[in-house]
Amino acid sequence: MTESKPYISDHSQDIKPIKLFRFFYVAGWAPFSIFFPVYLVERGMSLAQVGIIMGIPVIIGVFMGIMWSSFSDAIGRRKPFLMQSSILTAFFIFAITLVYSFEGFLILGVLKAIFIPMAEGLIVTSLFRLSDYRGRATAYSGFAIWGSVGWVMATALAGVVAWAFGITAAFYLASLLLVVATIASLRVPEPREIELPKISARSSVQSRIITSYFAVIRELLTNKKMIILLLVSLPLFAAINAADRFFSIYLNSSGASPILIGLAFTFPSIIEIPVFLRVGKISDKIGARKPLLIFSAAVYSLLFFLIVLTSNPVLLLLIRSLLTPFAWAPLITGSSTLVSEIVPRDKWVTGQNLYTIWLWSIGGIIGPLIGGFTSDAWGLPIMFAITSMFAIVSGIFFRKIKEK
Image (cartoon, rainbow, N blue to C red; front, side, top):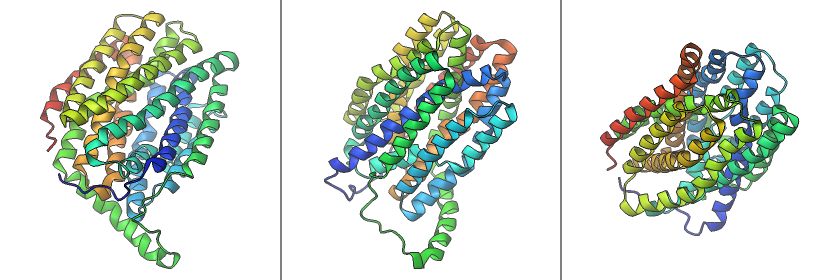
């Protein structure tokens, strides 16, 4: 697919706020992501209920995520939706500390799914609009490490805070960091080639949004390359979501302290920083994204299999720290860059968010539900064995992807 260069040529200053938002948004999400499953178990939820609380609201998020991203593409704006995402996520995490029942957690999850846009597609689109076509994977890698650094800082600090003051204190930290992300979003640049709609044209803009919502989705769902990418990625995405949601519970049941649980998510992010810097350059040099995806699936399969073999928290820390960086960095760099190359430029927000929805929403429905019910029935080790097989399936079918 051929494509002209972006409109902005001198953009070094424009990219800085994008990286800053990425840093604080990921830092804010990290403590909640790690300790929420443990928090649910401490509140008396069964593993099956944990899977339901995490999986069911995502069904609504599938449709709402596409809707918010379509609105963004229709009006040519991302900043308002970034602000909405970060500030409402801050309020959501704070509200979690006030809830104790299964029904309460489920209702909060549904409200989050309805009102919070997905920030990933929005901010990645902002980056790609300021990046040269031939160096896009390298640009993404340089952007992604800011999320890794934010994750490192927040997970290490959250582990200490949770150990000293309890998990709710880690959630307060997460909310504060997301408020800072909202402030950072104020400086995220909007495309200069698009003008804001005038107030007098509001009705036509609304009509355009409604029409665009269905047109964009229809166009993307008839994109054969996009459909193949989504379908072959699904087993791996389900495996990642199942493993990520229950790994902290597995550590906790193995006797790990909150500090060690935090470090299990901190160390991989430290190692993945140089990995991110390298994989983007390698991908741009060879001009292909598929090898990154195949390699990632193989490493994920090995990671999940090795987790089955031990319940020693120190060994689990080492396994996750050494393998996760070489699985996640190639996957997200290769896939996000590939989406930008197979989706038309004016549909990037929707394309990136559709991919994100597939990763964290469709995979986020299937993964936690499979993880919760299989763990309840046969135990956590069996669940990780199943995720290992899922990763192998995606690795085999990634070979079917056609990049050009």
